[in-house]
Image (cartoon, rainbow, N blue to C red; front, side, top):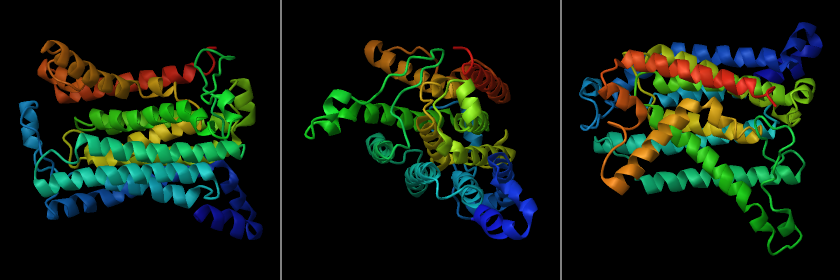
Length: 377
């Protein structure tokens, strides 16, 4: 909206406003806007949540030092989503279909998280939606995103090929071409693509949710991952960079750089209040939305495999839960003292701040490594 006003309406009368046609400028503005929104609205949000008695409920089987966090305002993810959506609406070109799709994913996953958090508050217990209900809703949203991308493919805006890190010429297509010729079977042709997309987006959403267990841990890792996506989205849309790095040339995804910049700014601003000791928690309304947004961007810019490196900490946290649950069901014993992995280190005696900073360092290493894969081919 602000982009349209400054560039399309006022620029003919004041030529310096031409600067707002550049994606880099608008990305910086979106990041700063998101940061300021979180910093300015944070104290009001904390007071409001306290007045409404929307506090965090701590499960009794967790580390004992977490019990003192009971009652800390939660559902702060509402502020994060607001700080992502508003700057994107202000600074991005809303005629771009990928921007609208990313906004839909963020709001839809945040709605699922809101329902989960709301039930926890109403029941005054740490159990919200059932796992089956939450998973069904997440799959439904991811499927809607997948169907939309299939429509974009028909319009020539999207490719279902899968880019492989370290390999230039390996680009398998997730659509079964042999089935496209038959009108009765063509829906099945897109089944591998849709299943893979659902796994990526739903997995990303839940992985961030599982990581959100210590003050500032998840939001700090999200900030690093979003910064990496900002760079990757920009080079994917830039014809010269994309050609030099042998990436899929997708000029339409350039506006997503602004969206990713808004996530980075919102994460940094929320970290101001979420840093240890946290004054506010994001809740599922924030973690599910952030994970869903990151996964959606990965699918759109064709870097689904690279997501495993960009979000390396999230992947490790999710795998620790999967391994713990699977091994316990098979043998009745545990691999870790507690899952997700950050709780294992807590029970080993590591201080919370040490775990958080070390996981941030790991997230930064993963993000930097993911950027190097663009040229290591």
